[in-house]
Image 1 (cartoon, one colour):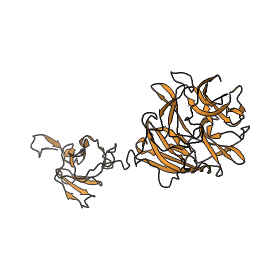
Image 2 (cartoon, helix red, strand yellow; image 1 turned 120 degrees about the vertical axis):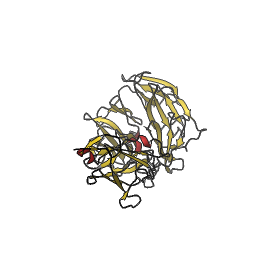
Image 3 (cartoon, helix red, strand yellow; image 1 turned 180 degrees about the horizontal axis):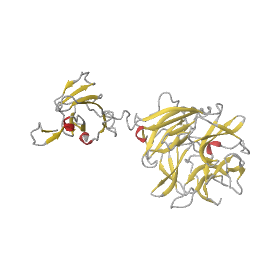
Image 4 (cartoon, helix red, strand yellow; image 1 turned 90 degrees about the horizontal axis):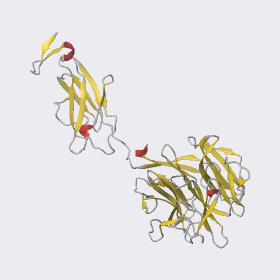
Length: 434
């Protein structure tokens, strides 16, 4: 059966056409919501659902928007129920603005007057501030009585894992956890690590772990468990960190050596060859510093931030090197970007340097966070969206890492210089990095 168009176009339509009550498309627009008219809506004709797959930005307001519906042939009448307005179903003229703060129910009625179809339409909007950083307590760590703690990402038994070294009055212990199961830790046997080892300076270089032992030289381990003294090593006092392999040279282990008259900078290459450099200046950190390896324009660098000088005075400086033997001061005490402290945590996150917490000269811990967008040359406090929560206890000397899920991880930490290491693992992530 064929019939003339009610629209006066002269076209003819079949019986199936006049029973078609389907919505073909939905668009929204509003002068104060830029780009709203370009948002694509998916229509599930089977379930009668209309929604946008790509959520609109957090805080978008979609009350009183212009809604345009199209149909394959045409619909004779439409009822709408605006849940945000508390409406029962009312007839809609197709031009009045609608409130999409809550889902809207559409009932379309075909030209035959008997066929109808029900739809529920809504607008997906991000419910979290994209730049907000959500922090949470994640897991309890082993060894509640530990005085020191250092957690290192390391390849153990062929898989990436975390090795956690702890030290109590009875000695050092070692624990292991896969990177995806940080709430489950297993104790491992630890052999031949001297009691005088500063476990906070254990560093991974070329698949080998190194640690300085005061008065006993440099020690190394190829599996994290069994340690041996490094042959022909000079008197290493402090391990500063690792410079990655890049176009400016091979990977290097950067250290401070005990010299005959003054301490000097030095570096070791993968062939265990040592190169001595400049004398260590008096305002350079000797312990309690934060360190970070990074690349800039395909060249590798190592920076150390804050810490204590040779007189055990806290610092607020940033130093950097590309070879381990010569260091440059990036930001000095006169800039005063942050309070002098030791035990701060430092990580590269969201393309910035994050400097977290630390212990000030009065032995009080902090949970302040400072950012640097220029590799430590300048620092500024984070905004309120990224601060640590009240439930997080101020601390310093925590281990820090960023995992593949883009969580910033904080392992342990102390509330004072002589305090115990907290057996807590915290993590934080910026919402837009999910």
